[in-house]
Amino acid sequence: MVSPGLPPEGGGIGSYTDKTARVLAARGHEVHVLVPGVPRLRSETVDSVHIHRIPTPSLQPRVLARAWGVERALRRLGVLDIVQASEWGAECWWYSHRSRTPIVTRLATPHFLIEELNAVPWGQRRRQSASRWLERSQVRRSARVISPSAALADRVASRWGIDRGTIAVVPTGIRSPASDMGAVPAELVGLEYVLYFGRLEQRKGLDTWVEALPAVLRSRPGLHAVFVGEDMGMAGRSFEDKARERCGDAAGRLHFLPSMFQARLFPIVTAARVVVMPSHWESLANACLEAMALGRVVVATSGSGFDEVITDQVDGFLVPPGDVPTLAARVGAVVADELLLARVGRAARRRAGDYDLEAMVDRLLAVYAEVLSTRPGHGDGRPTPDGCEHELQGRASGLRSRG
Image 1 (cartoon, one colour):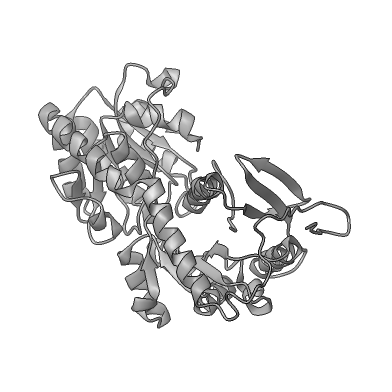
Image 2: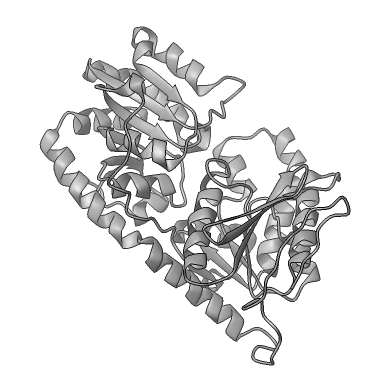
């Protein structure tokens, strides 16, 4: 498995890779995770998962350099059954041209979609043209493409001219949160708050939420708003600055915290009155599933992957994306209704159970089995990694494998 990072870095791709790799390893599969982008090779084994942080060559464009670094590392691992990577960054593009090992590409959010949702200027889009082309090329060269939601599969298939029937939907899985979670940070103790967690960027609807906040805070004088995640900003300004300016005298009721591991994050989620996910468009937010699994009421947006998880007014709430008055009114009404919070929170927890991590890994393994059964030469006695030891050892000359 190839990932741009692992928690707390790496975003949704990193979170997905980390938990999926751990389950696969626990079931007896030999799992290696490659994370490109470090100056020197660092390898470690965590919960039977072999993690290799690999160097990136000094080439331009950097997207191609990362793909080359991944290709060299994968070859030095030896014989592999499956390689899985995201389309984002096209980190397996080079390997797809130089290996018979089947590649399973899992859709995350391609550059073209991020650019549209974040309203990226045309000049920057031109600079990222290589990334867009490489991502599409890797997907089209993959033995199988999987997607966390039908919404993302539909959009990518339409944009890239891919047969939608060839994309398998394998949703993100979640584990039931531990019952022995720690405490919320001292600054949040005793506060009543609404929560957003995830990257603070335009495509996640932070511009809409910032505009809605003054009305929400006015509707309930004791209410606070908490943000957890990396602030990506918009138009040269941070969302924290925008929110504090927009909220004026209520700016003291805003709390901004950095990205953090689940052990620190989940107590904050559990203590939230409502979780707000105002994305302009979303594939299938892992954060949404986590909040629902913790019994939190989520107010999200319609017209994308949230529709596949939330039934409006049953196990969550959906509002039109970008609709500031409706978002403010819905959050204000829900946060004030104790009975509604309890009823919908219980339903949200039940709905999250449909995305049990073990069941989602079963679906992933079914895709692997299908890919392997149709591979040329399958069953011809070709050696596999099972029963062999493979390691990456760092030296100045690079990487090597030992079988």
